[in-house]
Length: 280
Image (cartoon, rainbow, N blue to C red; front, top):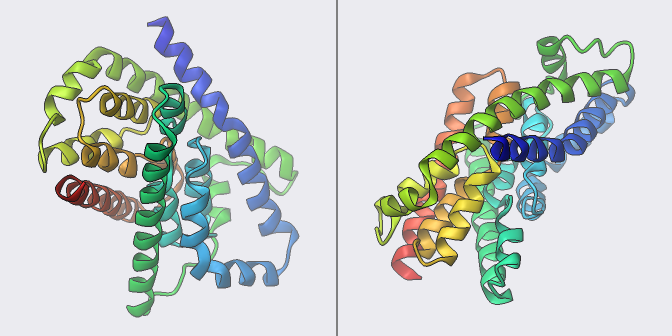
């Protein structure tokens, strides 16, 4: 029990710099810059999925947590958020490197994640644009009201307040999830998704939705040990966005929007995994 509590605390602490910097930048843009900066951010939205798909492969789930906050403040588009979520490599890359998986395999996984994320992000933003839906206006004040950050006093105090609220929330959930995964066991997970062309990616996608770094570790290890197909692993890793989904549920006030985003993320990951199973 002590082990998974310590792991949850360490994983949560790793997010602190990402969270604090993200909130500080958001507050600075909202309160210290003019409309020109906001307009520039909105115009850069068409390049968001391209940038997001590349940034997401950084081996930490801090990027997805930052993206969730930026989206809740309406500073990035839906397509950009999904691109970052889909390309997020979380702990997959360190596990593969430590297991000497080989540069070819690592390159293939990262490349496919970036390509799927880029394509999905551009399609989502393009579809919304064709429907005539304009990006929502920035709503950083909505985040402030949720946690009573008193941002009128100090940017540092506001960013710190936001960060501590989210840190505590993530820590509590992570402790529970680490214990659950330890109780279920990797062998039990493997029996559900081993050698199943369609069911495998679906179950792996469900595991990927678990907002915890342990999910990506388990999926990667199961593949390297021969329990998972490539498509099933990719489905779980594409859906898996670390604690990004957890942060999104906490900070984005539109619950229906959250459900649509999670359903889209899951569908894209599972469909891509099934395709990989048939052609890989």
